[in-house]
Amino acid sequence: MTVAEEIAAKLTGAFSPDRLEVVNDSNRHLGHAGDDGTGQTHFNVLIRAKALARLSRLARHRTIHAALGPDLIARIHALAIDAG
Image (cartoon, rainbow, N blue to C red; front, side, top):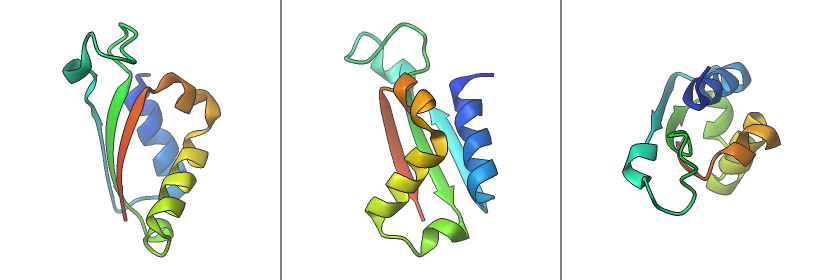
């Protein structure tokens, strides 16, 4: 399972989103800080879920990070989140 697939599975399980897009953007960061050569370090997530809609932006990000868990977060260098 790729990191993008892990992200999607965890967010789907935690929030049952109406919309979820996970984009691996690692190829745009080759040779930059955080690039470990795996091609799985930089991601963009767009998520729309009722459970997140009522939260502040900061609370959404914290909730998403908690749902992904520390082991997965530790393998990601950059995670851009568009949540609502």
